Image 1: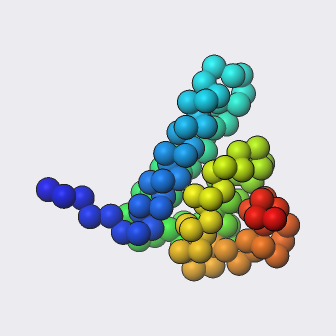
Image 2 (image 1 turned 135 degrees about the vertical axis):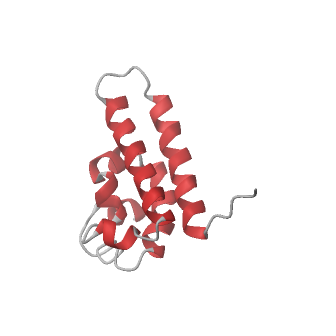
Image 3 (image 1 turned 120 degrees about the vertical axis):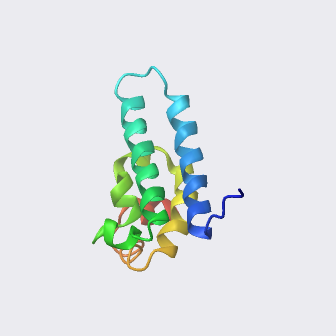
Length: 109
């Protein structure tokens, strides 16, 4: 049976691949790979919630960047191009995307 994924699920899948690449790149580096692994798990949580059509309430008042970890995203700016489409797709999750000086806003500049 062919898997049918929504555009949001496809975008989150791209994010997961990007995070996995960073995790692999840092394999064996004390502290760094564990944090990347946590971000990878959080990315999978986003996919699970998107499949359940529950992502907006799961995030509550957080942006996707806040949920994943803004400090990690600052150190891995190449991943932000995969976060932006997700934040734009989830109503309310991009409310502070540019206005509050978050990692996402700083990385866009």
